[in-house]
Image (cartoon, rainbow, N blue to C red; front, side):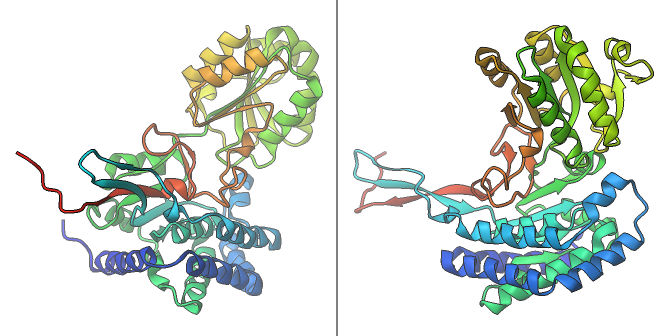
Length: 416
């Protein structure tokens, strides 16, 4: 298959930008981030106008519409996120180790940017800004392919990012956008072995599965966010209600939202009625097991598939369990190893849960919606990884670098 001209030109420009960034000083990259942040604030009206064009033709669910919407508050959050990234230490200046061999060779392990990264994502235009900020700071070049539903917003944001880079003398091709909405362009990216170093998909199950299945380029991705919050019998009822409401309803469409609540059977009758009332008042629907249906007749009985579903909407699965071991078995059997939480006052139980639930992020007495690079102190995130190689959980600056070795000698030669 012949590589299309647009991809050759884009990746060659990206490679040149990556090499230039490799020789740039931290203060230069930080200046670029701050310049973009200033432009986002100055051009907020233009960004909102572009976003309104996307919204006018959007016909999806309210939860997915929320992913697409930009506002003054979200624009400010994007700008503040870039400034937060600028304040972080330079990931390329870390010391990863040094040692001297008996023959006198000095060996140092040093950070190295990955190179040219492509990100394919859906709906959320702010995701592109977060990704661009992290890749710039870590010395990588980025090629973005946003969803067709956010094309006007994404185009405007990428234009401003490039303008900000150019204003401080950094290569504007450090951030590029795939030219057009044709689905075939995604296939071009997936086939770009040797031109693109890493692909990161952020979106629904079908997108991630396609990228994993078809890509000839290494992929950093997360599985579905089939996330659980388990309420142990030692939990404080008020805390449990507050955490679950936030974990489900703060933003139901994000990948860190809780999709299933597990609750110890012995406390279910005491806690569930108020919890169901609170969630229902906020517009949440339910898929429940028979024991929970007995507590609140009329709720929809869950199927086996419901407990494997990432709703990404105001829908919550609920099941009662017979204690910690049953909860762990349910999570390991039905979950996606993305983000899972326990609410408990019994420290021994909580420690066992944290050790036994091998998810990318596991929490104790906190909302699953904290599964986010910004909340981890990363400034932002380019995605969440649920694999077991290179990176797990929110992917920030450190995870966007690899390493290499520098070896210094004084004339050593290797004996036969």
